[in-house]
Length: 323
Image (cartoon, rainbow, N blue to C red; front, side, top):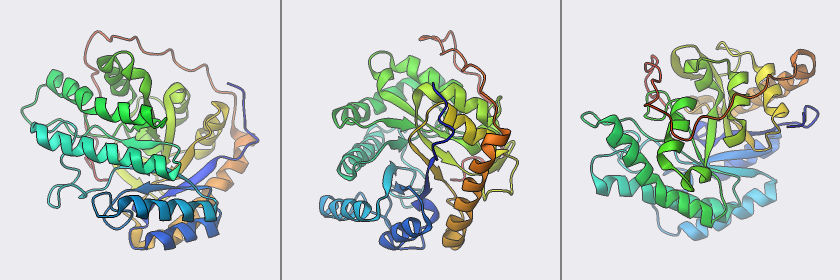
């Protein structure tokens, strides 16, 4: 791809880091600060996907986004939106078919909301492999659960972008490609990638900038925060180990045009202050990319369509799945 280092990245902030604010207030804050967009997590406090009048409420938010000039991606990582007692449950891997169907239904709802909002992408994740479930069963269960969501996204001409999450069945880039092999054609071609830069630092074998280059052909959504190696904890910028100018330079060099969204889901208590400081940090890091950034190496070759075995993955980092 042609380098686009002179084009500013489109920065966004996740509403899962602004849960102490009303959604309208959060959107106004981000627009006033100068963000280009918002990653909207559908949750009980922000555009509840299960409450009555969803279509009308979505139309109101779409109008507000247009007024403020904010682009949007729809995220589905709300902790207790389906089960008030178990975080992120049920998942696409649940042994109970009705429970899996509830997650699939939520994702199909998210696709409809995203289409009505004019979103750039819809985010999802696999979930943790349940105890007593074999790897083969888990992979095929995931593929079956994703099928109706992929069809809905294709019908709406929206990219579905799955996020590798530490501790989940799909935890890294290798397992993302394994899922694509399990899905097979044509469904594999409908599945895109949400790349979390902190997760790359946490457990990928390559540096985050190299991960960006390798992920480029499937990259539809990016989440960003600081993080330390082996510890799954989303940190404010400058408090972890990531060198950000090479990462931002890699995103520009691969021609990424989607949102780069700050994800600090455990820092809502300081959301407005962190939204401001995060934007300043990332724009300052962008200014340094021209000085520090070198042309990226050639992206890694695409994985074979049928890998010979399950991805070996890595041990779950300390912190498990805290998001």
